[in-house]
Image (cartoon, rainbow, N blue to C red):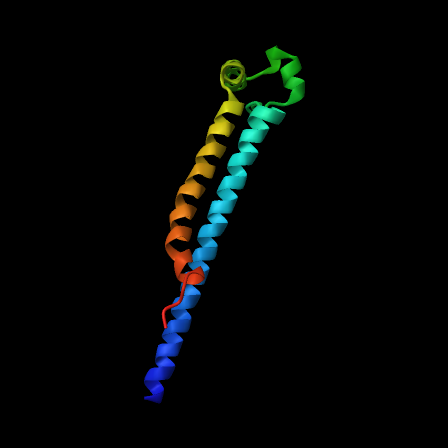
Length: 136
């Protein structure tokens, strides 16, 4: 009998520990999700923070002295420089057309909503066992 009582107490203790940890994890996800959601909405509509611009494509490896004298460039270097100029013009056009702020806002909102959707049920299913009435 002593063994069954101690094993029942250990099982009860482990079960209670599981429900406490699951409740805390659900609450943590819920709080972080709501805080991130509020932060995103505040920064977007109230403070109106601008998102940083991304960097341009790296220049091809050509010596600076050769760039000044285009006649000193080899055909491969001229081709690399031409491709880089085309890539740079394409990058400039994409920079003008792409709205990084809206994309960052959508990504942040999606992450916040996912945390809330995940944390709310985990907390709601485990918290009553921890904070509710205990059966004798």
